[in-house]
Length: 89
Image 1 (tube, rainbow, N blue to C red):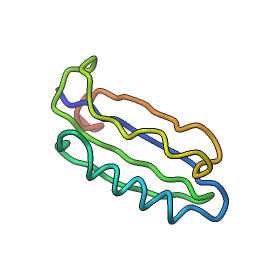
Image 2 (cartoon, one colour; image 1 turned 120 degrees about the vertical axis):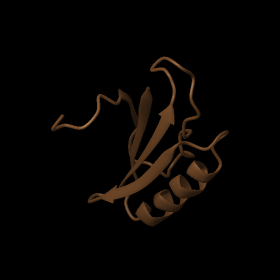
Image 3 (cartoon, rainbow, N blue to C red; image 1 turned 90 degrees about the vertical axis):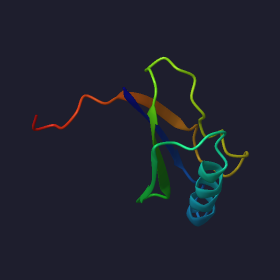
Image 4 (cartoon, rainbow, N blue to C red; image 1 turned 180 degrees about the horizontal axis):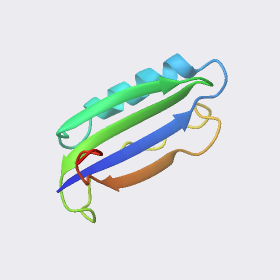
């Protein structure tokens, strides 16, 4: 089974580039390497990190921590998804 972890945060105004680099470095420091990882950004200085893992849905997996105080404008959002295969299949 493949599990995808989604981590999303919004930077404090003017700190989007800093949050992006923070997320990039923390992803590289995960306790083990995911099958795949992807870093995305969106308007309003939002940063999204997706990591894919070969694991059961309920398994404990390495996750990005909360950024230090002042770097984000709200708490981090986290979701866990189970892969069901291609949408057209």
